[in-house]
Length: 106
Image 1 (cartoon, rainbow, N blue to C red):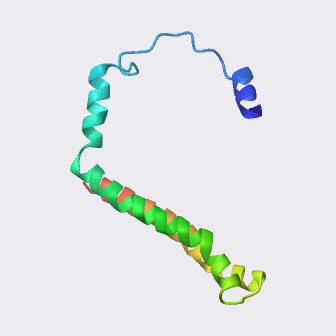
Image 2 (image 1 turned 180 degrees about the vertical axis):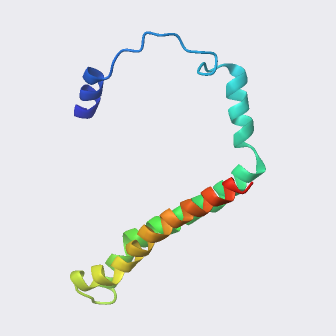
């Protein structure tokens, strides 16, 4: 709530009219829905959602598994689990760079 109040007080009022590119019309809404039904978007969604579920489950429960089932102490479990995040820190920017390179070569 504090953030909302701060934003409400600090952001200027928008009194101008929306340009034709900014207005939300039925045609534009239909175009968005059509884009969401494209084969590539649907395929990526089908791949992304299970991937995110597995990733979230792994990152949430693996440290608990190491402590409760394998009997590691919390500091050791965190040390064992830490490289997972270190790899992600390096891999995510590289994946983004790879996407940018592919788009640039099209």
